[in-house]
Length: 352
Image (tube, rainbow, N blue to C red):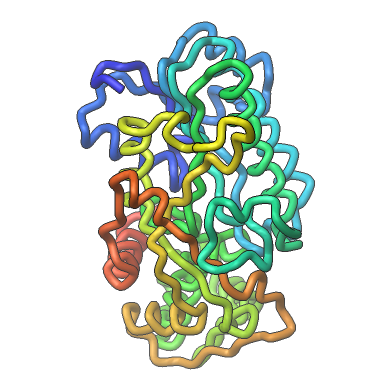
C-alpha cells in the first residue's frame, strides 16, 4: 500500500475497524474511505455495488460484522448467520468485480472445532464439530475464508483472511447482554463497586435509567448485588485476549508485507491460508475476573453460576505462523485491562 492509496475500511466504527482506522492514520495513510451503516448498508447488494463502482477503492479492510458474546450468539442465531454472510458476500464479490488490489477479511477464532488440539493451528479448520452456541457465526466466517481463497485460486485475486483471538479495547461493546466476556466483566464489576459504595446517581447515569428503582431491577437481573457479582459458568474455561490496537497493527503489517502466495506451500490443495492473530497466552475466566476486580478496586465476591454454559473449555491460538512473518503483540493483559477500564470511565459513561 502507498500512503496515498485509496483504502476502504468496512465497519470503521466498531472495535476492530476503529482500531484499524487509528493505525492507518498513525502511519499517515491519507486516502481512507469510511461509511456509516446509515450511509451504506453492507447487507444491501445494490448499495454495495453502487458504492464500489463510484469509489473504486484499491485496498479493503473487511472489519464489518455482526458480533456478540455467548448470549447474543446463541439467542440471535438467524441474525448472525444471515447478516454476516450478506456483508461478506457483497464486499468480497464487489472487491473482485472492481479490481481491488488486496482485501483483508477479519474473522474470529470461533471458526475452529470445539475440541481442537491446543494451541490451535490454522490447519485445525474443518477437522471437527463447532461449539454449538456460536455455530451460525462461525459458519459464516468460515464461508468468508473459503470465499477469499476461492476467488484467489480461480481469479488470481489477493484476498487474505485473519482470525483474531478475543479482542478488547477502545470502542468495545459494554452492553450487559450482548458484550464479550472481558468488557462484560469490567462493566458488571464496576457497577457492583458503585452499588457497594452507595453511589446511586452514578448507577442511574451508567445504566441510563430514570431512577434508582429501575437501576436496582437491572442490577438484580444481571446478578449484581451489594457484595457479589454473578458470572456465567464455572470460571474454568481458558481464554486468550488481545488488545485491539495490537490487532490493528498486525492487520496493517499484513496488508503491507504479506501476499496470498506467501501463505501456502501445496499448490495442488490450497487451503488454511488464513492467519491467527493473538498472543498465544491464556488465562481462566475466574482469574480474569480477579484481575479485573483488583484493577477496579472491588471488594465483593464472585458467584459462578454453573447452570449457565461454559462454552469451549480451552481456546488458545498458535501464533507461530504470523510471528514467522515478522509480527508479535506488545500489550500484555494487565496493562490492557488498565487501559480499557480508563477508556470506559472516560468515554463510555458520557453516552448516558
